[in-house]
Amino acid sequence: MNTEILGIIAMFAITLVIGIFLGKYIANVYGYKKTFLDPVFEPIEKLIYKVSGINPARQMNWKQNMYAMLAINLVWFIIGFLLLMNQAWLPLNPDGNPNMSPDLAFNTTISFLVNCNLQHYSGETGVSYLSQLYLMFLQFVTAATGMAAMAVLFRAFKEKTSTELGNFYDFFTKSMVRILVPVSVIVALVLSINGSPMTFEGKDHVITLEGQKADVSRGPVSAFVAIKHLGTNGGGFFGANSAHPLENPNYMTNMTEMIAQMIIPFALVFALGFYLNKRKLSWVIFTVMTVGFLALTIPNIVNETGGNPLITKMGTDNSLGAMEGKEIRFGSAASGYWSIATTVISTGSVNSMHDSTMPLSGMNELLAMMINCFYGGCGVGILNYFIFIILAVFISGLMVGRTPEFMGKKIEAKEMKIAMIVALFHPFLILAGTALTAYLPEFGTKTLNNPGFHGFSEMLYEFTSSAANNGSGFEGLGDNTPWWNISTGIVLLLSRFIPIIGPVAIAGLLAQKKYIPESSGTLKTDTATFGFMTLAVILLIAALSFFPALTLGPIAEQIQYFSK
Image (cartoon, rainbow, N blue to C red):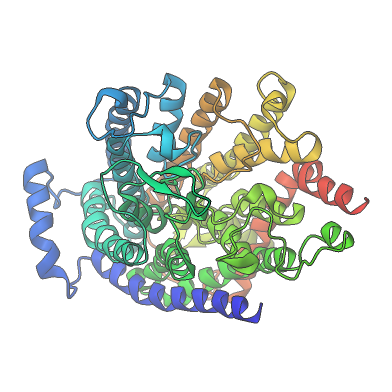
C-alpha cells in the first residue's frame, strides 16, 4: 500500500512540473511570442490558413468570436449525426457494426461535440472504425474549442481597453497544431509500446487459457486514447473504458494516462499567470483548486483502500482495499485517485467502475462534477472558475465597502447578472433533470438495476455528468433509451455553451471599460485572503444547491449501509 501511495504522489508531482513548463509554452503560443518549435509548426499553420481562407490577423470582438465557435460546432454536429446513422454501409467497418438509432446518434454526436463523451453504447459493438476516427477528430476540436475560448478571455485582460479580442480560428488552430497534436503523438507512442493496439484490422480470433475460442476487439486504440485524456474528453474506445486491458495495459500506461488528462488543466492555470504577467494570481488560483481537489481525493483514497467493512465482518481478507469493480493491476489507491481526478477535471474516463465505489466515494465524485471548477476541462475549467472570481469580488467588495473591481475594471450589474445566470444554471439543469426523471417512473426508475437510494444516485450522477461535460457514469443505469438520450443531449448542449459564452461575454464587456489603475482602495485578488474567499463562495453555492439531493442519494445510502 505504501508503494501505491508513492505512485499517486509521483503522478501529481510529475504533472505539476510538466504543467508549469507547458503553461509557459502555451502562454507564449497565445501571446504570439517566439518558441523553439516555430520552425516546425509555422509552415503547417500557414498551409491551414491558406486552404481554409482564415485570416489570422483579423481581429474579432467577443460576439464575433462566439458566433464563430457556434457556427463551426453546428457543422461538426451535422456531419457526425449523419455519419453515425449511416455507418453500417460506410467504409472501415470490418466487424459489421450497425447504424445508430436517431436518438442515440443525437446523444453521441452532441456528447463528443461538447467534450463530454457520455457514451450510451459500447465501443466494440456500437461504432465502426470510421465513426471512431470521426469521434477522435471531435476529441481534438472540442478540446481546442475550449482552449480558444479561454484564450479570448486571456486577451480581454491583456489590453487596458479594447474590443479586439483576437481571432477564434487562429487560437483554435494554434491549440490544435502547437499543443494537442504533438503531445498526443508522444502519449500514443507510450501506449503503443506498452501494448495498446493501433490497427484497422477487425476482431482477432484467439484461444483462451481455458481452451475456448474468443474474439478480441481491436482498432486504432492508441491514438484514440491519447487525445481522449489529453483533451479531457474521456470517451472509451472499449465499453470498459480505461479499465480495459487494451486501453490501459499496465501501471505505466495508467500513470501516463493519468498525467495526460491533468497536464493541460494544470498548464492553463499557469499560462494565465505567464500571459498576463500575474504569476502570483495563477498560484493563488492553483492553490484553491488543489485544496478542493485534495479535500475530495484523500477521502476517496482512504475509503477505497480501507476496504468494505461489511465484507470484513464476513471474515474476508480486505487488505487490498475495496476491490469490487477495480483492476488488480492498478490497485484501490490509484483507482481512488483516478476517480476524483477524472471527475474534477471533467475527463470522465474510468479505470474502475464508479458504481462499485463506497457510497461516500460516490458522493465525492458527484461533488467534483457539481463544483466543476477545480482544474476543470481544457479551457473551460478557467472559464468556470472565472465566474466564481467575479462573484467573490462582488461579495468581498460589498463586505469591505469597496467598489468591486477585477484587473482594473469595475464589476457592475450586467456582469453580475451574467455570472449569476451561469452559476445557477448548472445546478438547475442537474436538479430539474433528476427530479423530472424520478417523477416519471416509465422514464427513470424502470431503467434502474439498483432500487432505493443508490438508484437515485445513478439518476443524479447521469445528469450531473452531463451538466459537467464529464461523461462518466454509475453504470447500473440502462441509459440507452429515447428519454435518456434526448434529455441528457439537451443538458449537454446547454451546459457546454452557456458556461463558455457567459464568461467570455463578461470578459468582453469588461475589456471595453476604462482601465482603473490600482490604488490603496483596490481589492487585491492575488492574495491568500481572496483565495480563501473564492473557495468559500464555491463551497457555499455547492452546499446550498446540492446538499438536499446528496442527502437523498449517497449520504442516505451510507447511513443505510452501516446500519446493517
